[in-house]
Amino acid sequence: MRFQGKHKRRARSDTKKEPPKNIFYANPTWYEPENRKEVNIISKPAGKYYMHLVTVREVADRLEQVPARFLQALEVVELSPMTKNRSKFPCYAMQWGQNIYLYPIEENLIETYVAPPRPEQQIEARRFGGKWSQEGKLWKLRWTPKTIKDFYLENILMHELGHINDDDNNNPNKREAFANSFAIKYGWKSRR
Image (cartoon, rainbow, N blue to C red; front, top):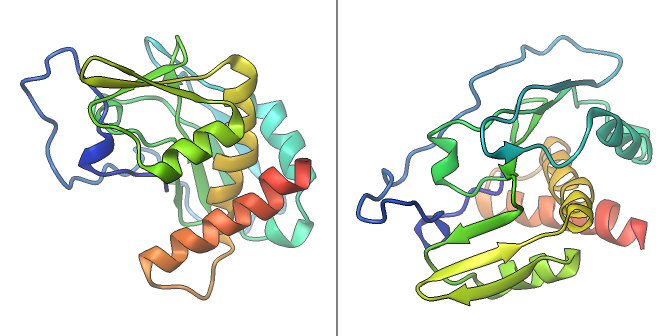
């Protein structure tokens, strides 16, 4: 899950009100494990002012390129709707059980944050074509339709698939490191 803390909180039109701290927003739809033979890919409406960055067909095509052994535990990929609570935090996706939830972003493909990005966030965005800029007290991350699609298919989707395939790590930092390495190996590097 790419769930960042306070330093990467999205900017709001009412900047005097901060969203609640340290709150985890699980996905509203839970899919029970059914030992599916194929991955079920579901698309729900993104929500007003948001858009899904990939299609069901693009997700299916990308998963077909992954070694089959990494898809054995994956059951559902959902293109999830944006909710009011989730819009307060920059979370691109989440792995929950055997499922992956991909979240939409703003229709204009510009994300706004109240604090500067960490170096690794700058590197990651640059790797996929995202461009950071500072505008007054806010930071903007701009994408094009092509760069954000590449970011989701090669990085976000692969990162979450890495979590599903990590059976060895219980430590959250080690789980993130494993998922990041998985995304680089089976996403970014495999396509270049």
